[in-house]
Length: 454
Ligand SMILES: Cc1cc2nc3c(=O)[nH]c(=O)nc-3n(C[C@H](O)[C@H](O)[C@H](O)COP(=O)(O)OP(=O)(O)OC[C@H]3O[C@@H](n4cnc5c(N)ncnc54)[C@H](O)[C@@H]3O)c2cc1C
Picture 1 (tube, rainbow, N blue to C red):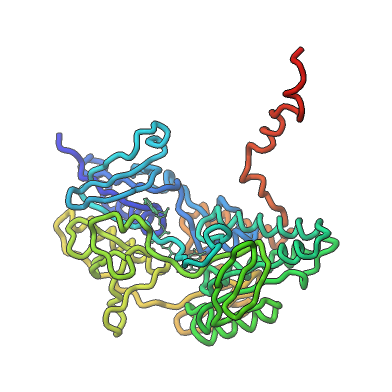
Picture 2: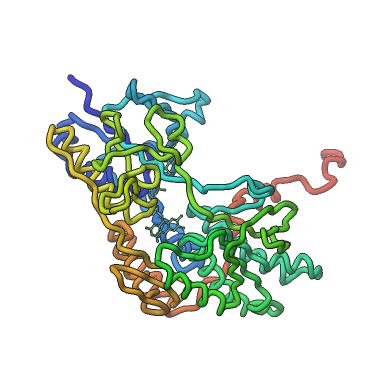
């Protein structure tokens, strides 16, 4: 019996999940007949709907509902929880580590494939800022979003109970670096949540909290255009948020954020959202990369010059065929990632069947951004919206986009309930240390080691 043709999908994010989902439909006959198999390798058993992370941080959506369980959705694929460490495409082999290889201590294992779909996305693009690696917090994963929420509320608890004004000021100062949608939405949602939460503290007023947005260029939210970006700045400044344009974070050692304009901000919170760079695994492949480390791709989403290798999303430099500007690439965003995944899956299936391939063509339609509860900004299909209508559009758009009916229903239920009841203000930071309580209970009482055993 011949081996099934193996399609290896690296990454279970937007591109990985949507490609595998479409492939399992397109190749249902081959999967049933056992002539093809789809293997998805991903470090987490879920796909994260990243545009909902700011709302998860604000407590408007629970963390479980911003992720989609891959095993349920990809029921005809093999999902392997692990990480691809390198790819030797010439030999059609990927090296990976899985939870099992770690447990067994056997090191990495090799997996051969016939077709490769490589979609590991991107990671935070950091700069060599002193102290950043030790004190910075990212905002790309659900763990980071929930960790940040817990951290902000914990800082309010510290500020409320300390007698030291310096500790109080540092605890109540929150610095966000990067004015794209991730940074602005995260800051705006958390500020809104903290402002509300302050009413439950007898000694913290919303004005005591200091929120600073540091942006190196002269504008924020480039995704919604210049006018709406300016409106967003006015709206944030109106809430007493200190927006610093053309300013950079120079260092954040010893819990002091030093800005390029000379400002020194003692703080325990530096959130880094200053852009992304392609996932590091790409450098450990024999596939062609461009000068920014993205995989060089054709408009058909094949990796340039490499047969049977395909890519899309943040990791891929896909030519924007709708642009008149020569050499323009599709921006790293979900709008492209979802649409590219559809074409990519169709092209993989077509190539297996010897059929012609399609080109990926999508003109950017604009963007929507939330600036907290009932506040937002949008520039979509040439229409500019702000305030409540933009916020409503943001919610309606993302509700229509979040994968699976199950997640749509749960998110809608949560939004409806949060409209009826008060906002959640609880911090569950102790979830990050689930054994702490038991370790304390199981530890011998202090000084017990000196007592004779009876
Ligand atoms: C806070 C935030 C808000 C955003 N809001 C918007 C928005 O409003 N609109 C918009 O258009 N875009 C938005 N984006 C961007 C959008 O989420 C990304 O462009 C999109 O996720 C890219 O899809 P992808 O499949 O390339 O990468 P991802 O969705 O990031 O998926 C990559 C996957 O690959 C996995 N992986 C990484 N390395 C390996 C490896 N070595 N082996 C196996 N698997 C690996 C990762 O764990 C992940 O599961 C937002 C992003 C963030 C962080």
